[in-house]
Length: 236
Image 1 (tube, rainbow, N blue to C red):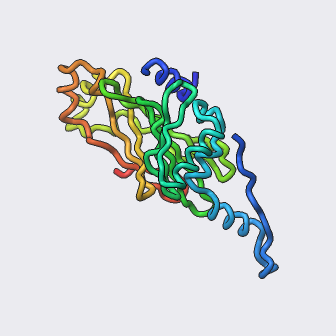
Image 2: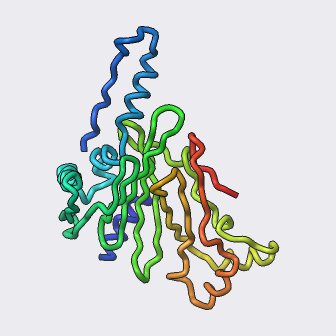
Image 3: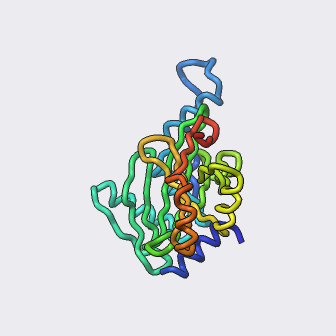
């Protein structure tokens, strides 16, 4: 079972059609390369809105494309529509800008879209998170190209190792602390204002309180990844 399917099932327990890109040669300069025109069109057309609307159903299976279109229509008239979803709940957009969208999918899950502007064609990072009060937040990250087809996430982001969430004084302490965290859960957050991604270890909700008190003094509040135009890199 892949991680997205696992998260989708966890949500249940706790509670499209891609737009065709337009390509054209420049009527003003015969020497302009087709690739340059295509890149410019992609840069101008990929938005958080277009990604949300054209996400494949497998990545947004509880909201049909027509429902997503209706949600955007309400946003256009400065209104938030809490749309019925396939899980017999309500979904709604909490924030939208040309490069950012945050969606409350269910009471225990969110979906965030951030358009990134690398050298060349833009792409979108999407984070799906489940978690609620009393439940550790856990996230999956996905990436989509200008055609809103999924890209290999491993080429663009490396999920942090457990050790990277801590600062240890010595190897003995490191070994003792890491043994206390059997199944690390991680919440990822995309910044609305910048191409920054943060990761937070969310093990406090399920660990024994005694063990968590031992772990907490060495645990970083969060770790940060910066977008370098090609991939996310950990800020040391």
